[in-house]
Length: 115
Length: 112
Image (cartoon, rainbow over all chains, first blue to last red; front, top):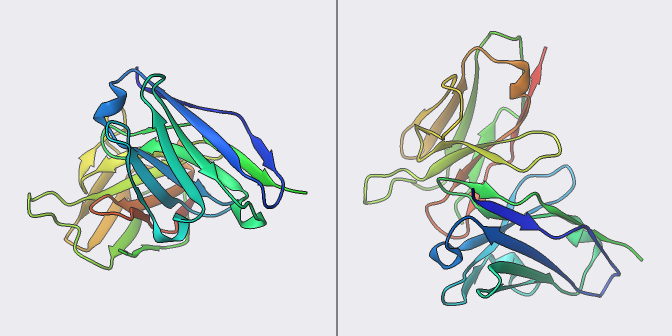
């Protein structure tokens, strides 16, 4: 059974960074790119970017190029997203996902930016 | 970027009746391989999105056949027949043709 298990909720101070993990199981981690999606409170879905775990190559939405850094550790089948220079605009739920077919989504991680 | 425009913003449906949600893309989602890369998701309250329809008209595994998808290269429809209480949530269309992946703004389905 494919699962994407994400880390727990995070609270970050303005200006700081947070790093969220997404542990994949039930499939060959390097066979699929991992996408990351942001959902601000009460808002829709916003694609951040993806990483190809096999090669480490990445692609980002323009808006997130200076905000997010995607990495992957093939030894632990875990993808990461680091969010830097946090502001209130970063308060949101972040999903890792394989949105195609068959689709798999992590449970989401709530990031709260608060002083 | 491909813009996905969804309508309506919300829909209220009596159980047993049908509902339709529209989605329009700013660019053709038909790939040269003949596949149209539009997907439909349902996000139930407090949950992750779940896939309903892939590649415009294919029913995802485990999804009731009350759900169906149709469309052309740029105009798409999700139809829900015989709406049930468990269908409440926010429906999103999304395009997976090219990066950046983009989604519609969502349609909230409520039960009357």
